[in-house]
Image (cartoon, rainbow, N blue to C red; front, side, top):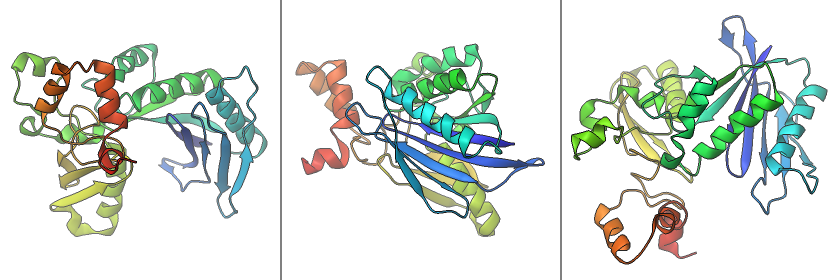
Length: 279
């Protein structure tokens, strides 16, 4: 028996198989990644079983096939042919935004899917792909429970002082507030620190640095402050995302005739290190 952990993104599908050992989860027995899922990409799967060397192979995509479906079929074939003994009992999905709906992991139901769909605009680079991944795995692995694990859930301990923006309280009541992200990463690091560095229960600052970047301050291994807010745009400069930006810039761009789609593309895909480097 095992749990399949997946992170479905716009251009890749990361996965790992963890054995269930009594009431605990063991070390990953298989880890892998399928890259090249973007429209012009060349999909390839790479994986490594515990104690073995890394293997890679091309993903076969027929002209009429959806590339993500092809990747999913490749993963299913791998599980059935090479790792049939690691029977998948549940599938855990990384989901970026849980909004105000979810403060912990949940089993996916039609009601949960409907709520998640309303959050796509808050994390347009991630949420739609997370959502599509859940739907695809549910169709490909019928009867296997799907569990959504949220990046925002770790930050449920943020105080109202940290989550409330200085805006009309009616907007706050509608859910316009600071949520925080990269929570699954911070939760893992915090668990390791709790086990290995006892003094980390005091004030600790953690950094999640990648194409998306943020900082998180904790006490007692609970989130107290974080640089990301309502969306995954706020805070540090990132690979292609702007990070913190004077809202007056957006008003200026609107006055210059910029529309929603153009501003969204600028902030998510043409800013950050890419924007300042001009490359």
